[in-house]
Length: 267
Image (tube, rainbow, N blue to C red; front, side, top):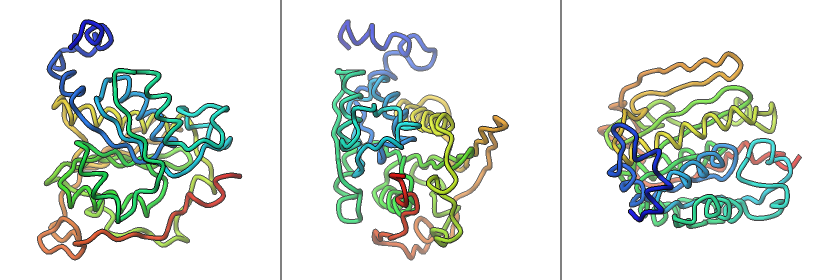
């Protein structure tokens, strides 16, 4: 590391169990964040500040005024700007030491393998079940570790997968029916609560990349902002999982058209 890098990352370097080795691992790592919204905003800022060497940020949406209550990486003057480009600008301003790749597009069954295989760790910060299942499936098929999270109203949940641990489909085999899902555009979402969960995702990425601590694998963590309660539920890989089980039925990427949070997001 250069003298400037040693000054910038000093509080990491002096951490017991982290040190220069941990920081060097971050500098050499590549992380893909899918979604530059409420979850992706704090996640992207903290990973940029932490010195993750290459960060990809993917989002096909543009910034709107209704986003600014929770999507803290975007500013009022960014309205109408592609979120991926707005996020890239802030990440590079907070840390010019890193490289940011912006993907102002949807992650699809067609482009997911080519994009995801370039990265060491994937973070799902999307707001739709269609995207979550696609990212989960692509990462498991490619052997990539990832963290997935979601939040609506005052409650969120988060889990991490590394090869061999339970995947999202082990717990939730298929997307729920559209009429059974409450979305942020229907019932709202507390901005600061989204930030809490997004920050946890950044921490999970740092832990896996550096080897510190224990990642949230084979478990799901729920968060209730109203009571400030976290609950951890341990799970096991499902031997009958249609994706990672002994006899998988999902062997190719497929896309779901169901994207509930795309409704009324401009209102």
